[in-house]
Structures are given as structure tokens and as C-alpha cells.
Image 1 (cartoon, rainbow, N blue to C red):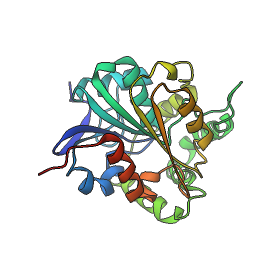
Image 2: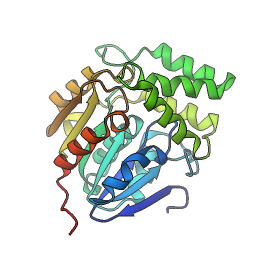
Image 3: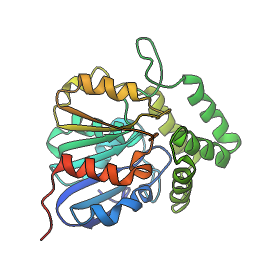
Image 4: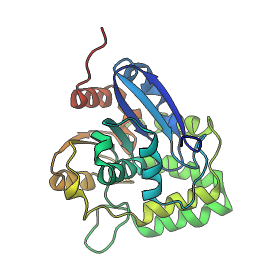
Length: 260
């Protein structure tokens, strides 16, 4: 059933699924499409309730992973950014036959600091986003987009791209954003990372404030087949701020067959 899920497919070659982050939509990948579509068949997904995709019930990470797994090609490579990285990981754990390799950008097994884990953010920050969402939706989203770029060398340009892409498709409902925020708050994949046997490339900015780079180092040490590429001067969206380096790392890892 694809009725609920908006997917844009373009290009030729090995299927490459692109999963965006919280509150965003598939348009965020647009700056990369021209180059990547020459090497891969891109399947650009709007996650449930975001962009042009309808919401689903119940709304939790297993349900989202199941919905995406229903519509992607078998043995696809999956690129997941932020929340999309957690969804990609969930797909690889729950439906291993669907996944060939993973590329996780700004990803973390657990976004929030808790007992035994300090490579995340304060739960209070997430709580404030949740409470501010109802009061002033646009201001809260702007703050979140800005937070994703804090510390990066060209933060202003990256924020501009994020805001533009966010505005290109229908805005998610506050209810969807709250539920998706709850996923970020509650998801903890630390116990399961050791069972993720697919080759996995972690691409992380060394200035990421949303998912500190320590999280990527932890995953690298705990993944059975993990590879880490830290991008100097990048924050939470290195695929936008460091496009050429990102594409080089991606292509090198996935080794697509060049089009004739």
C-alpha cells in the first residue's frame, strides 16, 4: 500500500532510499539529486505525516519502519538522516532482507541523555520544543532548524536551505510533530546496535550539537560492520553544508556501477 506514503523515484542504477529528519520532507535532498540520480535509482520518501505523506496510526518507530519497508525495493541501500537514521536502522533490524547497506547521517542510537549515556541532548530541550510547538509553531520550527546548523562554518547558508525546503511541501500537523518528537525522546537503540550486521557508513559533523559526534564514535565501536567519516566544520546536516565531500564518501562506500 503506497497510498499513505509519497515517494519520488528518479535515476538509474542500484536503488537508494533517502529518509529525511524530524519535521522535514524529501525536498531536503533536492540539492543532491542531480548528481546522485546519475549513479542510483533514488527513492525519496516523505515519512508518514510529513511532506506529501498522510499520517498513520499508531505513530511509532516500528510502524514507520514497517510502512517504509512495504514500499521500497528489496536489497536497497538506505540513507537516513537524524530521525531518518533511526528509522533506517529500525528497518535493517526488523526487515534485514530489504536492506543491502546503510548510510546514517547525524545519527545516534539515543538522542537524549540518560543513565549511562551522555552523548545526547538534555531531555529538557526536547520538552521545551514540545511545549513551544503549540504556542508558536513557526518560531519553534525555525529554532529547531537553526539548532541543527549551530557551530557549522556556513550555518547561515545551511539554515536558509533547510527553511526553503521545509516550506516547499505541506506543513506537518502539530500532532504529527509531537508524536515524531516523542519518538526522538523515547528511542534507544543501544542494546540492538550489535545486531545490525549490514555494512554501515556513519557520516557525522564534528560540530553537531543535536547528535554530538561522541554518539557516532560509540556506534562505530559497537556496530559489527561500521565505518565512520567525520566531517570537519560540519554540524547536523553535512549532506547540505559539505555536499561534495558527502557525495564522495557516499559513492565510495556504495561503489555504484558507473552509467555508460
